[in-house]
Length: 390
Image (tube, rainbow, N blue to C red; front, side, top):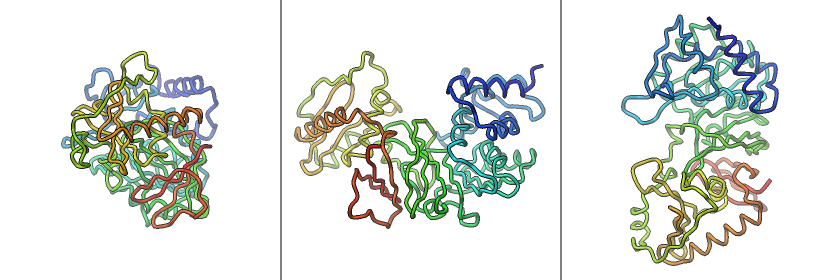
């Protein structure tokens, strides 16, 4: 029987080959000392889509899947379409490296999930540090607490609650990490992060996609240090914003006094050879528009998650253009379409940047931007994002 140690080493080798870079020795040891299979009691088989239960004293037959470089669904409430996952190992190790965790650090994690990530972070902070991990699903909190206690991780506390509220009893924190996507940086997390501390956020992109962004707190402002694309489940609780996920197109037209019948359509193919997922193919321009254009909108056109499109609304001229099915469709007037094409032309001249090519400064409300600021402004309920090209 092949031991889980062999699977661990094989996975690390696979990750290093795929990324082309060596895994930090300290993080490598934390991974080896925190076997992933011990944190999974059940998972949704990605091939069969059937739930698989794991015997606490065995589970060898599941090692090929548990030690593959993929995320796995580990929990789904009966009354919800939301799920909890154990994240993809290569992504977890990369996030741990970005956080530059030091012995003695105090860390707050939003989304405990299986507890695997919190357990690895506890290995890095050592006996002088501590990891507080908040989870919103009560059943998951109970099972994760039992796992942490059974394995014997002393420097981890699993909490039940809304991670957007932080945890004042453990604050201030040297590091804060998101394990779910949010459109905003909750105010309490601004407040509870130490000056010069690091916050690793997962910022959702309206219409699909996420950015993992590392911020450092400098003079009370979160300043981005690094950004990379990713895909995470959404954060629930106070940071859940359904309206940014999209609104029904027909309702938007009625609510903004736009005639439902379009005034014009023109072909627009985005250089695509195949009619695949348009939202995925346009993620670059969409992510840029989210931070640079207040009129950017996402629309729902059906019940499926793929029935989504995007567009731009010109409030001053009561005009809307929608990008869908290789078409530009205009409502009200052509002002929004003309503005969109102008912005698209400027975007191409800039080198077609996506959100990961933007430098971000995030100001907690009710603080205000300096008068001499330069860049694009994105206003969210808890924060103001100021962005500019790197």
